[in-house]
Length: 247
Image 1 (cartoon, rainbow, N blue to C red):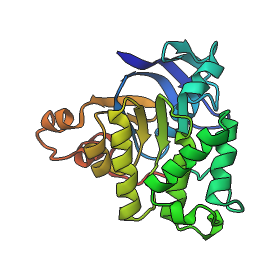
Image 2: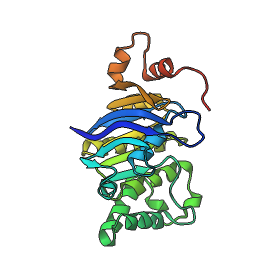
Image 3: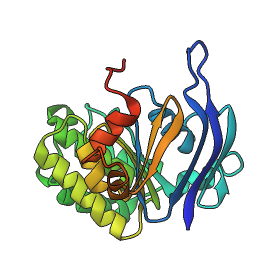
Image 4: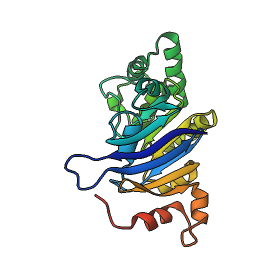
């Protein structure tokens, strides 16, 4: 059963030479780990931003869990979690203070929020850093805390924009393994990344987009099997999007 339907989605930025998202159609199924992949400027972050209600499309339709994005934005926001590529945490606060702030934004409080914070700090090996300023954290610690902030309200659908970019192998492993666990419990995950090997091993389904249009979709293993001249997802990606460097 599909949980997200995108139909003829269009977004143009004023003064830009090309259309950021160009009549994009996507269907994402409940329980998927869905990889939205593409080179720089392909339209990935713009698409995620429209799905999350952060920016409005110029035209097209978005339905999430049966709700229309235009008519039911509040209901959609209650069931989604967003972990942006840019860290959305405050360096001048401690880990606990950050999570208390975000938890209250979701309407959480009291012992329930306290228990949630303690659970996630332990799960992501941050308990000893609970009362330390985030400004003292490594990049991997900040990424883990950034993820927790998007998980506190137990979203049905989780959007992740480059969640493991620029972090150590240990932090990456902790994040990916917990996301797999979360997915097994029923959370649908939509994920963007430039890390093709990670995407191939992590995602149940993927869509490759370029210049705002979808150019391939399917299960990673089936895509590889269907391209006899490619041995992995990265080779398919380069075959479809080219080898020239993007700005």
